[in-house]
Figure 1 (cartoon, rainbow, N blue to C red):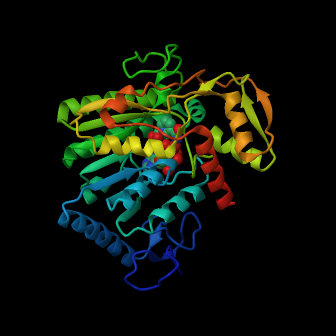
Figure 2: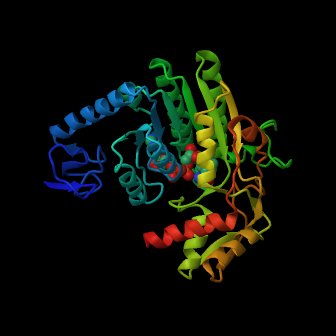
Figure 3: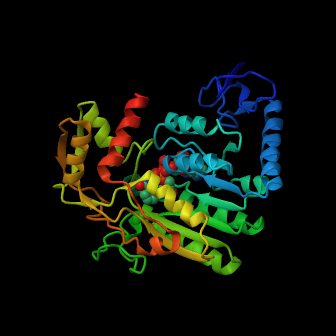
Length: 377
Ligand SMILES: NC(=O)c1ccc[n+]([C@@H]2O[C@H](COP(=O)([O-])OP(=O)(O)OC[C@H]3O[C@@H](n4cnc5c(N)ncnc54)[C@H](O)[C@@H]3O)[C@@H](O)[C@H]2O)c1
C-alpha cells in the first residue's frame, strides 16, 4: 500500500489530498483525490462524504453558488474550473477520465484543480452519475461529451449514448433535485455544410454532416424541451475551434505546433483553402462566464462563441511557422469525411446578451499555446 500526496507538502491525516491506494485499475500508486482507483480503503469513502459536506456547507454559509462542472478534466472544463476557483467559487467536478486521448493529460489537469480547497472531484460518468443528488448544485456547466468529428463517424452509437443519453440523465437529475440553471456545450459543427456565412443562430440547421454534429443538435432540442417543461434555464454555447494551453491533442492547433516544434511532419487535409474561426480559450471562458452570470433571465437559447475572424488552413500553418520560427513539413491528403469547408461565427447575439467580446489575436494565442507546450516538455 502506498501513500501519495497531490500537493506534495503534507502527509497529515486530515489532509484530504492524500489517500492510501491499493490495486488501482490504472496502475497508479496514488489516487488523484477522490477516485480512479477500484479499491480505496473505507477511510477514503468517509473522507469523500466529509469533503462534499464541508464544501457544500461552506458555500451555503456564505450564500454562494455550488457549481457542478462536468468534463472538468478536459481541455475547456479544466480552464473553466480553474477560472471559477480563482474567483472563490465552490466547484464540484466530474469526469470519467476516458482514454479518447492520453489520460495523463486529464490527470494533470485534475492535479492543478486539486490544489484548491474549494474544489471537489469525483470520477463519474454523466450517463449514470449520482453527483447531483450528493452535491445539490445551484448551477451546472455541462461540458462532458465525446468530442471529435472523425471519431464519431467510426463510433456513432457511442456519441448517441454519451452526448445525448448523458445529457438527458443530467437534465433528469436537474428536474429531480431542482437545479434551475444549466449551461451546456454545443458546437459550431451543427452548422455543418451550411453555405451562408457568417453562421448565425437564426440559420436553419439541416446540414449536419457527422454523428457528432447530430448529437450536439439533439442536445439543443432536449435543452429546449426541458426548459419549456420544467422552467430550467438552459443556455447552449456553440464553440468554434477552441485552442490554447492544455488544448486537445487531436486538434490541429496542438498537432501542428507539436509537429513543427519537434521538426516532424503532420497531415494537411485538402488544398489549404478551408477556413476555421479559431477561438482562444480565455475568450471562450469569458463567454461561458457571461452565460453563467447573465442578468437577462435567459430561459433558453443558443449562442455562437467564436472569434468572428476565420483564417484559411494555409494562413493558419503560416501563423504556426511564425510563432515557432520554424518551417512546417506536411503531407497533403484529401479532405476527410465529416470535414466542413468553413466556419465563421456571427457573434452579435452573444455580444448583446452575454457581453461577449473576443480579444485574442491568433498569433498571440498560438504563442501562449506554444509557450505552455514548451514548459510541459
Ligand atoms: N474544443 C473545441 O474546439 C470544441 C468545439 C466545439 C464544442 N466543444 C465541446 O466542448 C466540450 C468540451 O470539449 P473539450 O475540447 O474540452 O474536450 P475534452 O475531450 O478535452 O473534454 C471533455 C471531457 O469530458 C469527459 N467525458 C467524456 N465522456 C464522459 C462521460 N461519459 N462521463 C463523464 N465525463 C466524460 C472526457 O473524459 C473529457 O475529459 C465538449 O462538449 C465538446 O463537444 C469543444
